[in-house]
Image 1 (cartoon, rainbow, N blue to C red):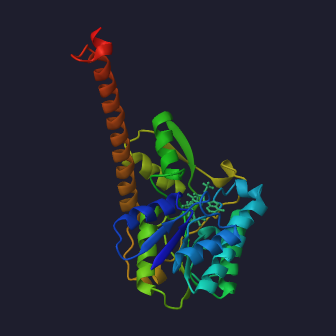
Image 2 (cartoon, rainbow, N blue to C red):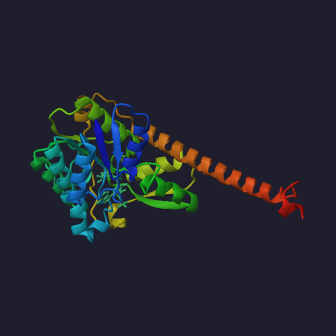
Image 3 (cartoon, protein in one colour):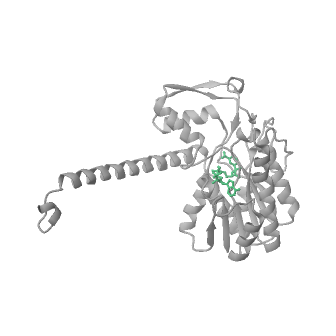
Length: 320
Ligand SMILES: NC(=O)c1ccc[n+]([C@@H]2O[C@H](COP(=O)([O-])OP(=O)(O)OC[C@H]3O[C@@H](n4cnc5c(N)ncnc54)[C@H](OP(=O)(O)O)[C@@H]3O)[C@@H](O)[C@H]2O)c1
């Protein structure tokens, strides 16, 4: 199958790129806004026709949750109208659309994990635009799988894990909210789940919504504490309430997602949040080590070049 990935330079798109390296089953086409702006209907149509796309995995989105409160039109364009452009192209070309949505479509006032069919009630501009994107996809008539996720992190881009590790290096103590409960998602695990869904379904007719996060449920304070501990930081993490940390966009107090449907449908087991956090931090540490080794060896070769710059026989410039 020919698979188009949009927004490929983001957290999720990057993980799909890593998986695609060893995938011999499919042809992958990776694009981001510089090569395929999903708001551009003609460009999307041209891409589907030219590459005979069978599946589109839409990782592109407007993800700046607080900024969206000031830029609702732009957020709506990227998170709702552009997915409609992709859905229409999928309908026309009989392709499958795999679209990523969010826990922010829910109201956040539940006390047990949200099931796929629970009533949505977004509390922020970001959540509303993502909910509208879901609605437009369902109405388009295309084959789709909408996968809602939450608290996404990876070793690339900006995310909570990288911010905490950076604060752990520079602060003695920090305050983190302890009254918002959810579950983190390592982008690598989500990417693997998307490929499992794809391989399970193939090009068969499908109109389904799923939830995917890692297993378990914690608060942001629990998450920050684990990041410091696993990352070997001594920074103290103090619990605070949401009222003590006001943000422009309202965050759901409870956004744990029920994972049973995706586990049954795709036949997958989902790693516990802590197990995946350990792997992501190991990946970050080995990347840091590699880059320090590279800069070390660059410095060594530079200083060798300078100290070795002795006249060589036959080298006219240096032998004079
Ligand atoms: N991050 C989270 O915590 C979280 C939580 C729940 C759900 N999700 C959902 O999960 C999905 C993946 O999130 P992510 O964290 O991987 O996102 P991300 O890192 O922000 O990546 C999104 C990518 O889409 C690109 N993009 C923006 N506008 C575009 C356009 N018009 N055409 C093509 N590409 C465009 C972005 O480019 P620029 O960077 O240049 O704008 C970026 O490379 C999104 O649907 C998001 O809503 C994320």
